[in-house]
Every structure is written in C-alpha cells, then in structure tokens.
Image (tube, rainbow, N blue to C red; front, side):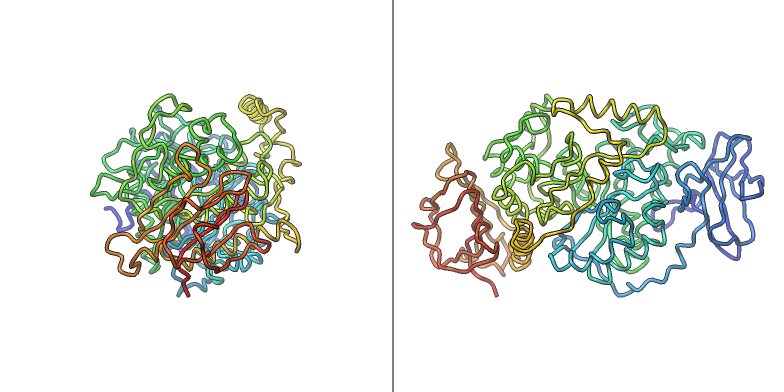
Length: 617
C-alpha cells in the first residue's frame, strides 16, 4: 500500500530500528542468495517480495559495521548506507539519526519569495573543510542578508576532495566532512540563527568509483545515458524499486535531517516516460516529509531546458516544483561584460538580451540557439520571477573553466558591482556563490581525489580535451588545485573586498525594503537612448493588476545600468516627478542614498547602477 509520503513501505531500504530489532533490507532481485556480513559474522538473509532480502537481529549498537555478500562474492557496502566511516569501498556503519536532539521545533523556513541563496561547498568554505567549521560563519551570512544556504552535494564520494557530483552513496554524509551527525548539527545551527538550509542532490547519475549498484540490481537504464555516466532506470522493467530508492532519499533529507528543501541537479538528464514523472513524485514526497514535522519544503530544479513544465502545476501538465534555475540570466550578463563568445555564450552578448530576460524571464524562449543548432526553450508567461533562481556565478560557471576563474578575474571591479546590482535587483531569486559577496579572487577549479588510476587518467584527458582552447589545463587530481579553492574569507577595511561586501549588504537590505522586487510585479525594459545604441539599460517595476499596496506610478521603481565604460546621461529617461535616487553602486561607501532626482541632469558613472523611486520607511 502506498504511504501518505508517496513511496511504498515494501520498498524501504535503509536499516530500520523498531521493537528492539535492527532490520536490514537490501534490493537484489537477480541474486540466488544474499548474506548480511557483520564485523565478525555472516548470516543468510530471507528473500522477500519485489526482489528484496531481509534479516532482523536484536538491536545492534551504533557504529556496528556491516555489508552484503551477493552469491558468495566480495562484501559490498549497503546501497542505502547512511555512514561510510572508512570511505566508499569499505563496510557501512549503523547510525541512529533518529536520536539527534533537535532544537528547531518552532522553526519556520523562509517563504520562497524571500529566499536569497548562498551556494556553499563544505570542503572549501573553511580551511578545516567540515560541517562543524561552517557553523561559526552562519551569523555573518545572516547579517549579510542571506536567508538560505545551499550545500553542494555532501553524499559520500571517493577520497577526500571532490565537488560532490561524484557521490556514490546518496544517503551517507561525507565522512571527511564529519558524517551524518555533524550534518544534523549544522542544519540545527542554521535554523538557530534564522537561516533556511537546502541540499543539492544528484538523481541523474552516480559517480564511477565505489559504485556497486549494478551488482545489486537493474539500477541503470539500457535506454538512456548522461554526459557523466549511465542514467538511472526510472521507467524500465524493475524501475519501481529504483524510483523508491530516490523517493526514500528525499524523505531521508527532508524529514530525518530537517533540510528545508532540495536543489535537484541537472533534471534535464533525468529520463522518465512514466505517467507520473519522478520529479512530480519527488515534490509530493518532500511536501509530505516536511508536513510530518509541521514544516514545508521547497524543491528547486536545475534545468537547462528553459522548460516551465518544471514549475507549472500538475493540473496544467507540469511537475509542480517550486522553482527552477534561469541560466539565461548568467549567460547574458557574463557574455556582455566579458565579450566571451565560445560555447553557451555564443547565444548571448547583446544588451537586448538583458532587457528581454528582465521582461520575459528567458532569452532563449523558442528562438534559435547557435550553441545547440536548433530552437530552444519556451515562454514563461504568467509566472512570477520568484519561480526562478538566477545569479552571476555558481560552481559550474566558475569550475567549468580551465582554471576556475571567478567573475572577479574576468572583469573590472566596477563591472563586478554592476553585475551584482543586476543580480540582486532582478525579479528572480538571487543565488550568490560563496565568496562572491566580497569579490573573492581565489579560483574554484574542478578537483577530485579518485583512487582508480585508469579513472584518474581519463579525467585528466577529458579536462584537457574539453578546455584546451583556454590554454593549459591544470591536473584536477593535484591537491594544490583543491587548496587554491579554499576561501580567504577576508575583506580588510579600505580594500575593494570590504567595499564589495558593503555593496552586497546594502543591495540585500534594499531588496528587503522594496516589496515590488519580490511580488508578481509588472516588468518593462528598454535601452537608452534607443534600441540600436543601447548605452543604458532601464528596468522598470510597476504594480501588477490587483496589487492595492502598490498604488500608482509614484510607487514604480526604476533601475538604470550604464552598460559602458564612459559617463552616460539619463536626460532621455522621462522620469515622473518627486522621485529620489535610492541607490548608487559607484559611491565611495557603496551604500544607499536619498536625494532629489532631476531627469535632466542625472548622470551615470562608468558601469554604474542607479535606482530611482519613492523612499520607503
């Protein structure tokens, strides 16, 4: 019988602790016999329905190591292991996540409209690279104006260094980060300071090293593949157990670890022709898991398809997710400011794209994509900007360059401030990549610590092949590449870093003070003095129909961006009277201002952002 949470009880795979018993279950439908191997013992398991094997023992203590032997083969870790103290290849260990003493009983996560994401890689966020070491920095993120931290994947990966997208044990928090109980402490601490916390999860593939899933059952599809390896079997024969392997994982993170939501990696590489798409079920399970602890969950999809089915309701033929990434925003800003034209940036680079994205969310909304050689995307009409997540850099944008250069390496400080202003004044949910807020110059290159020599060489060759046009490609296996990526977490006074951090804090304060930025407002954009010259970009926010709190044109908000390296005049802006300059990005302190606006004499400094509107208390 289906559970209210959306997945089926007979398909549960994690070790269960009930009635003084420890219940082990594993899916291995094609095996003739399966043994549970304890530290000094091996016991046969009983075959159950649906290809599962089960064994109950008197309750075992935490830390007990165990594994499974399939048809007298080598001992393998549990596919649903929650703790790998000795790495991906070794025995699993029992852990009681249900015994953690939570202090967040009265916590309520931030509403979607008010989310400001801070993307964080645990291994490089601090010199220690642990869950525990993140905790002392949470208060500073809260004071900056962040409302939600988003952890890059933490599922157990091979070695000590990895982005996280080569994880092979989806239920186990990385041992070198501190393991599952330390992760629970981090989530609880985030809630204690008033931050929502999200987890990036990978359901399109699993990493290559330490991946024993195919020995247990048909976890992989014979019909599809991904750029990173075999696709998971979500719609073929025996796919019910594979789907529930993922759905139970959703419940695991939302219910047992109290995450406020999930970021789903590369959902365009999740292939499913089932009547109910896996993505819709993920949302249903996440909601049910959160409701069990009297909370709510937000599920965000990383989709490169510009496909709003992700967030349309089930009744409208969609999957019902809460938000999706808007990569067009980043590509348009980066291509314009850097002049880069290679790869995905070949579809962008014109000022008009920045105007189109503000008004219509996507630039590629059915137009021809040179990068893909065909028309791409669909319109997002009728959907609020707060259904989309956008930023000027993230782990992919930075790390998928040969040397991991951040935007601060690629453009001038003034252009960085302009890009930040576009990001935090946009109608979309902002995403800030760790260190961006103070102009971090340490790179974030791709790094890994595989142990398989053949895999190591293939990764080296692949990086060199894909990025040779950028010059010398560093060795991702070199520990020095990982060391380069560790944040400096430093913004000394009287430096550009201090000024950049003040700018981010000021912009986030301003964003909170202006409801029109995160309501379903009417949006118009134009280029000044005209479309052809495009020297200044104007974004205009107006009250949407029916919004009584935003009454007339005096409540409109005007954002101006000088898209050039020379001073520009706003004499052609035709602004209403009685409005004030509320924000300037090129003042010495990078703070907010309130001074009369004269539409004839207003000047924009090179690469400056100016916001004009009615002051709000």
